[in-house]
Image (tube, rainbow, N blue to C red; front, side, top):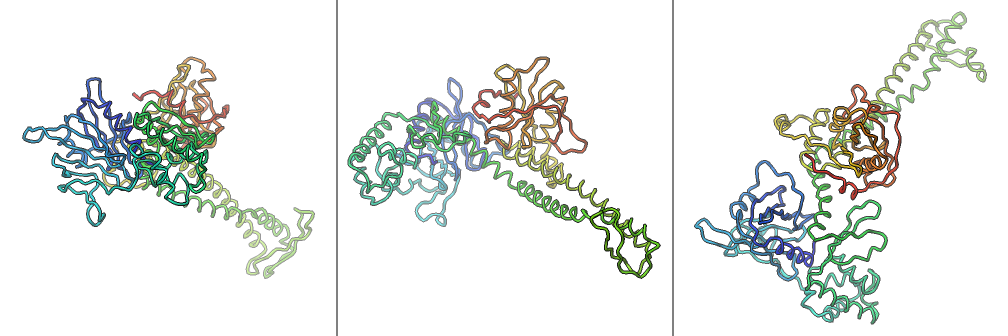
Length: 591
């Protein structure tokens, strides 16, 4: 889902309403193409997120404060120079184009008041954040566009700012519904939703599908198949659509998967097109809506980008260990005949008086198997019968030792694969740069990554993240580990013997602790903790996840085991479904 021009107009209304008489307090740049501007007002402060990311460009207020680089980028420093303490002078939009101008009243180096703008262009891979001076010239931009990159529009410091080329589309508010209908029919044969997307300015595919659903109760209906009553219904809904936009009656709606709660889409309309295949949740404002939708997408993308280097290392390690285990299994299979070697050695030893040096083979009575009275045996003619017997015993002992060694190596390899699965899981759940650095440090200590130059100094800067903290409905504190090393600390050092320990059965995930103290933990708290354990595991999007739970005193760490790996006994199992809404309701701020 792209942030369309109409929804951007609702965001502009929110910004103008909340930032009246606000001043710029701080400018931060946590990502290369993302800004956080903190505004202060009499009643406190708010944080405005502006992103020019190719995948997730957007603009909205946010409650999430990302970690910032130690040294602010040059664009951030320049904005601080020009905008700190500036008074916000309103947001404006040209029609329903996906461009919002944030106006500021500033003072120049001579103390004169000047007006400056921050142009936020929400246009997919062409998204940008551009500072424009009082003369309409570009001071700086997050992304520079020269003539080698675009023949239609340059974005470079010093040149005059120009709007992107306009598309030949109709404004859904100023254009008459009959005019829109005429243009839709003129597009020729094709689906109505696609025709609406071609004709209307500032609308996204989900909006066009919804208009088609409301008018025709079918998102795939074609323009050439429209019946007269369907055309009338479409004109009616276009009129209502236009009126709702004029009166700023947008409905912040988030569409999620029924089973997993994973965000699918969002809009400012009442969404009916998914039927029972999805859930629709309404938010108080559009900033809350966009914050909820993009937080998870941003987290996954950030982990993918910043964890890419050691994800490759782990993947290669898994492939290498798997190949090694496969080869060891083949060797182990070859050891299956070792008992036959011992039997042959015994038979030769029992019949030494009947054998002579120089024989290449013999047939001896097999008193080990009744069904096979005679056993054909190959002999080395250069060896005596006694030496042939010792040769078979030697091969038997070699196979016996090899089988024992291979079994130990295969078990060790399988344990290592299981550990690497837990690393994959904690990477998928990492929510910040510091957590990624903690995982990297763990992999360095375990020998999967090399300790690069400067890593030791950097390691001292890695702040140990606290466990996630929750408070059950019965008032019991629940702690959830973020990574393997924290899982060890949580289970083996922080937890008391009578606390309750939980973990998904045979599924990589976090260690979860219920702080019981001297009290008996009720089943409702155990269930809530089990749901948190399922949510913070590799099965976080599954249903009916098995979660084992027992007292901490029943959990042990084997000698030499890797981080996060424990064994436990005397446990019970609960089957629960992950619930992100429950997690949010129980969450406590980490101290």
